[in-house]
Length: 94
Image 1 (tube, rainbow, N blue to C red):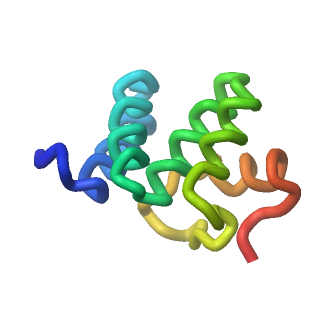
Image 2: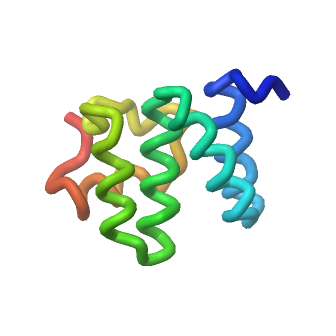
């Protein structure tokens, strides 16, 4: 996988998280986020939130701009993203 491809890194993270490989998923999401890819930031924030790192989750969720504009039905997002947005940011996507 091309490490410069943020979409591939993010999708890899989604698959890894669903397989229970949280550390590897976090690494993949972080790589995508570092390339400015909003779904990667959202997924990383959701992973942090699921593990109890609420402050870090909120910082990550807001690091790239309007995360509330994401389409929650997208396969690029983990299922917990909507819940995390609701809890941390006071509402999910519109």
